[in-house]
Image (cartoon, rainbow, N blue to C red; front, side, top):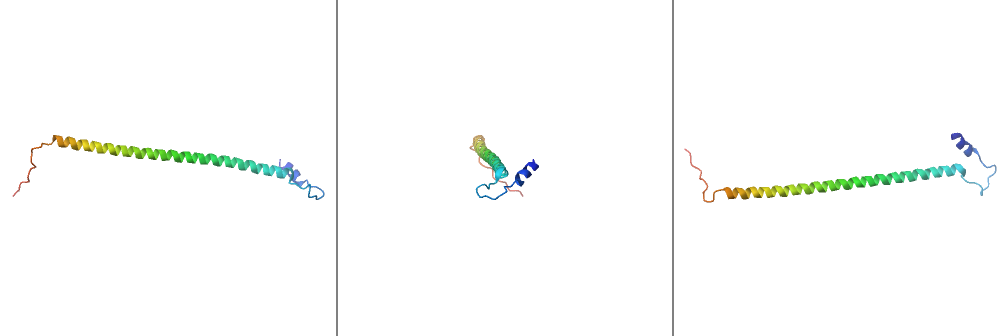
Length: 105
């Protein structure tokens, strides 16, 4: 392969003519390879960007779900606390006066 490229590069026209001078097969192969590598890199980059965006969106949804769940738990705790206070008020004797502290001594 290397010898083939060496032969292609070493073959030069005998006389310089502005109309016949071109990069030849070696130039075409080099440009074609650069184009292939560029297309491959662009495809890989777009795949990685899509993956990063999808992971970011999933993380954001998980964080929102966790915040919503924490908020629901806080509301449920407030409701439970209010129910305990209401049941404590119902079970406390209504006519009993608070005890006054007695003096010791």
